[in-house]
Amino acid sequence: MPPFDIPTIWAFVIAFAVFAYVVLDGFDLGIGLLFQFFPERRDRDVMMNSVAPVWDGNETWLVLGGGGLFAAFPLAYAIIMPAIYAPVIAMLLGLVLRGVAFEFRWRTERGRGLWENAFIGGSFVATFSQGLALGALLQGVVVSGRAYGGGWWDWATPFTLLTGCAVTAGYALLGATWLVLKTTGDLQNHAYRVARPLVFATVGAIVLVSLATPFLEADYWRRWFEWPGVALTAPVPIAVAATAIVLLRSLESRHDWRPFVMTLSLFFLCFVGLGVSIFPNVVPSRVSIWAAAAPESSQIFVLVGASVLIPIILAYTAHAYWVFRGKIDPDAGYH
Image 1 (cartoon, helix red, strand yellow):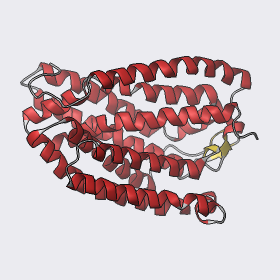
Image 2 (cartoon, one colour):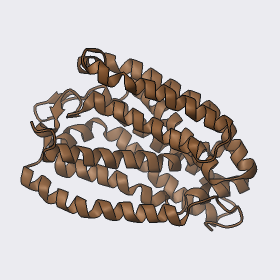
Image 3 (tube, rainbow, N blue to C red):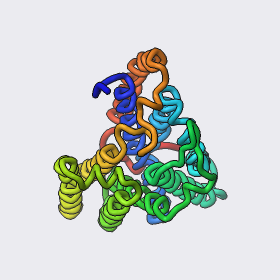
């Protein structure tokens, strides 16, 4: 197959959308995960104000990724979705719960504690479910003919619990470094203290997932450890280690923006590692992007629409972040 045909282009479009969602909604969910470690009402107000202008727009990328998979690779969508129905349903319910809690927390005094707990719980459920779904996809999906051939509970394994914990730790780290970037004073100091152990938790989880993954499928092992592939894959863990060291040093030196950038770099490197393990399959070790692709005319038609919509989404997203750049004013915000 040619290296950059239409299915390949669509694979990169969907990968970009998923990565954009992970890094943008990741720190947003991370704020919810960290809420319990910041009990002061004023701190919680500032934390919510730091994401209020952008949090709902971040989820646009989730819709684009899921819709793109359905439009460009319908066979993969038909196989993957039944395999991860439970985590996906839980994720959507968590996102709905935290969205409602985000709005209602500002509009009640008597029920404020209830909605804050709902915000924490919804953030955790959505985050952990995303990790479960990732683990379920990585560990392999049973395919029977052109359909999912496994059971309802196939996603529930020790490996998926590990990936759930890894994503939770990573999102919490994103949230902590976002607070370092956007806040000042005691709140920022607390964020620095919280971020350091989260670096070790995240990197530890990355190491555990990386050690377990090659044993899930023989194809993973060949890609990572057999020559000549190892010459291309070896720089990834080295880069992860170097990034983690720079991240820790930037926290120690109390740099404002570098911890967040380094955390994003960690996520990018993990995403690269995921691509090394899976590509060019869309259902790992089962179905390739070419086997799962919609007719070329359909893919081209949808790609034309995506080529118009994606720049628009990027433009208004960049505009929102630019308008609300800088530190958060504790005395102003979302009310």
